[in-house]
Image (cartoon, rainbow, N blue to C red; front, side, top):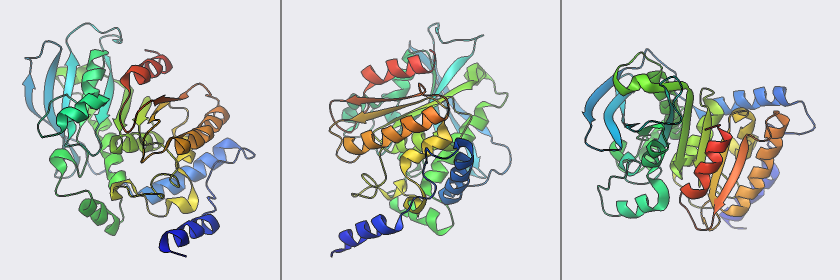
Length: 338
């Protein structure tokens, strides 16, 4: 038996998943148990003090939108940079002058500038062409779009993800938990009485989307942050066993001991009734489609048990590890009532 075989054997015999969804049991008690355990494993920071916002510049030169570059203080002394795009054209999504917000998160690209379709480094054009200009897509659909930088990536990168992910573990956190925390603090910031285009944010309609590592944050954030009105994770949903456990993945995806207690699809107990559109690629080699389909069967069962069978959907593109805007957005807009 080699080491890989040993670990699979241990997963088979030792991972009883006591917090997984059980259709024979009442829904709410097991949801509450799973939520408590997941938050314990996730290792998110504690909120300390009010979030503050610094506006760095406002750019009105693009005919499609006004761009506001800002940073919010997620933890004392630690600021997360963002770009906010406000559509100039009248939006059918406006309600009383307020616009829905789409938080756009990149994965292992060169940074959030991919979301605003602005190449900076070699290879960026290819990433943008893979449907990853999320903020541009969102603002063109009438959203107030916010491209948020992820810890360990882009402007918040200091080497690879390995060091910050390892450091987080050693102090009782996870890098994924910190990234989800930043989503939550951004929502806190949007809830402040701010001026400028911030005042156009409809805080009852805040959504999150991302591909790969951005999709991972989006999926797990929907399980934790109940102020989110919907999520569209792309090329990130699967079972842990058939993706994160089965092959090389960045350490920033890992939650220690998670497979002792639950599987990725079980987190739908925490996200329901929040609308979720899962996007996948049929040829995605690191989030294989068979794991997506297996996991989504569980998600459907959970959302049905939660009384919202129509609040989850799966769309699968014909290619690999990328976003599929042409098939994803129509489903998301219909599901969220846009």
